[in-house]
Image (tube, rainbow, N blue to C red):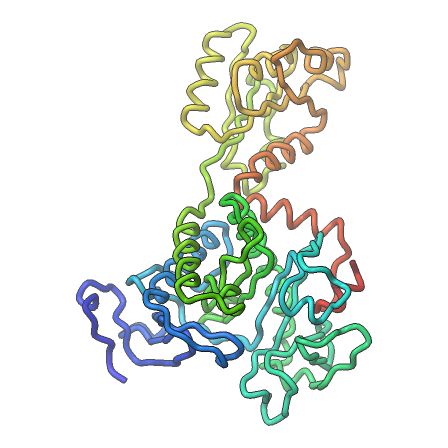
Length: 448
């Protein structure tokens, strides 16, 4: 097939060429003269039940593309490796060419959909304190390399490095069930080392979920589950690939679905179209906000290197201010007002030596949270009282350890920052809930 010619071609930097593949909801073209790039073109089709239900919704392709690009831009800004370069038309975006891996990776925060069928003991909406990660083998026509299957896209139970992969019916109860098929690992994996990327897929999928979980929370929605796919680019890099749009997740608003579930449940096409439009408009507001940690010290002799090390690769968020509020109160308050005008979403850590009353004084003059760390507390423990016993309207927080002060500041900012939330919530889930050994809902259920 030759180049795709449309009204936008003359204005496009990337010209779609040969058709590489076509699915139920999109086409993928190679970019002319760029064999390492592709253009993903969304169609107006919508399907459910592996294509058993099929309709066309005018403008769905544009809305799906807008949503996918909004999501990929957010994920990219959070440091997640995504197969996305830029949107190049209302219904398409450009991506690195990827060799897709035959797995669907699902992350669940709540029990919905097929999860309830596999676990009759779950109640709808049951919350998982650690997001569950599941792997499904992508299949078609109930067949895998000549082996008949009882259902497409079976749930995989596979311990990294094992010689066998167990397949379970995704719509049948799991507890007490035997796998309907056991495959040798080399019947599924492309090579003997492919299992080594499963931990990375697990980690990236969970990170993606956490970013989007917070992004939806900030917009009044609740992300309950998410399906993603992966591929490797021409250099062998593992990337989140394909699309993440309103077909990829379940999202609740005021207890009601605003995603493809409305279509699965038989909603009118006009209602489905409205949900897709709402989601495209909402995801356009997804962003990593401008935020700052103000590290205030009273003297240049107050060493701040500890805080830089604690922040690590986030140290660029921190700005050090040196000003004695006791000696230069007018300058101190003016500096504080200027900084909060520049970046209103800030948190202050006051790391003060002798004049450790500066933290409480600054907290009384600003609406941003102030955390004071008495720098001389070990040598002069009585000084701590000037940060603990404060008058009314002085809402200072006192933390003795710099590490906990930094963590508290990041937690405050993470309430409005999907990137920080991903990192902090991910660490909490990893340390407080036993790590899953298998990428399966069954193993996660036993662990929880």
